[in-house]
Length: 127
Image (cartoon, rainbow, N blue to C red; front, side, top):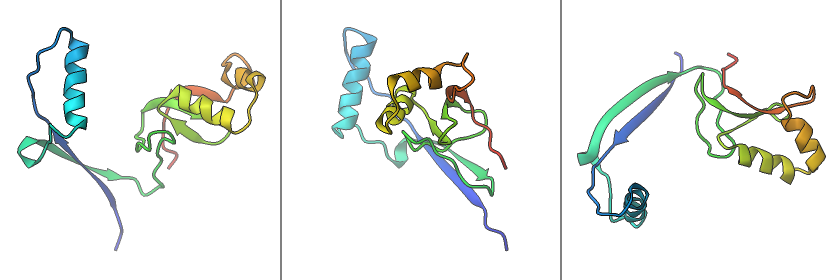
């Protein structure tokens, strides 16, 4: 008997009215209410569920946000370590933290240079 990995993704949604001077202020107010648990989504806010069969090959996640990667995702890649990132800053920070100098970073980020290995690309599974 085979083993399959199935991703189950539920979406919950709710609409809340808030008075504010700007759109940004309105979003900030709702975010604060949500983070302070004044807004709690539950089964009454269910919108949809998705099921996706994941390939038998190993799963790949971004290093900075731990997000599961899917074919075609555009993100940052460290070709030297094989690590994927949602954030350019997180990728550069990790390289710096591991001891890379400014000069080495400049070369690694320069897409015109033959030694470039920190860049923005699309993820494609290799299985």
